[in-house]
Image (cartoon, rainbow, N blue to C red):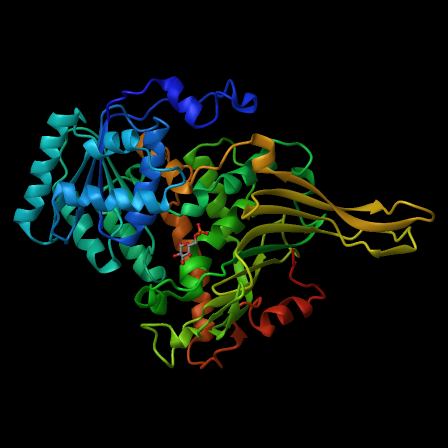
Length: 509
Ligand code: BG6
């Protein structure tokens, strides 16, 4: 990628120039020259996420100065056909308006090669194209391989890449989910990857870790002195983690029928949020230190109770939607769960007696990802008129309305001493007056830099599968009575009962 536009141009585009709040930021420099090879380039992820992210990076001049993208898949396409498809994807999904100049720069370093794995000749063609791109773009043999292929293509691809790696330049591998379908298969994948690549070359992606608000959880906990002393069983009654979507399966029946909410969201995104919320302070913000702490707390976690659900027909955001079993490609007797809620116990000094409740699912009342820390009640009821007073809740709003709120008791104006809960709010948009980058923008650049803090390590993934396997073991041999919630609601009644049994209830905004 040639940097035709001066650096000050992206400062204007990103709003840095006009935004005094962002002035003087210590922005990391561009990554080393490299080729990003996307396997699975004709798939949905490339169109919806990867190219829009690359375009946002190109606009902001955050890609390496010497850079190329090589798309690869089984579909036969010329470079120009691939570019035209990606232009359309960027127009549809990117967070910025498509600007012809910026697109032309990215298009000029975008190429395509058709591949059929297991076919030696085809792979030689990838190798030959990569050598040409090194010549043309000065990328020095450095490679980031993005593995966005279906699980069945994965082992052969890893093996081919591993066996044909050259000694020139560095190699990094970004591995997309699903990472296995249970503990045994995840272990196999980890063993396969580490047969050919070193752990520091492997970047297992969980895009939730690339979200600004998720990283802000670490900033809140470890850049402030006031939260961490309260962050334990002594002051926290329980924690609620919600990852709900109003969206359905968006035509991904084949994938979702096999996955369900437990594999699609709980195993990765939701459990990563648990780990970041519950972990001990790392000694440093580097990949080893952060991931050691996450792995440790996951190891201490157990599932105490679980509830599953599947949606029936209903209304979501005013629109009638069919039952899951009536979605195209779904088995009419499907027992796949579209909702899961679990009560987790963390067996360590910090969290013993403080349950973590987690829920995730599709076709629920609204899209919301929140981490809510519910504090203990005030120890002594001093005020008579405090019916509207709830225990303090610190809520990290991952999405939408990205920010943080703290609920606390305040005196209602007027005579007497009536106390009610009010909210103190921090909103990203208001405080920094800038749009938030997409998770993939951050993660692609981090992988190019070899920075693995926001990627999951083999041991974390395996602990996450251990927990999800324990849920599947409970369900084995049972036939669920599905559907058990109406689309557009907050899930099955049993999910409410899970908390009511403990004299608690799910937080509603
Ligand atoms: C993906 C799941 O990992 O995350 C999807 O496979 C889900 O089913 C998506 O919709 C949610 O991501 P986000 O960033 O929109 O919350």
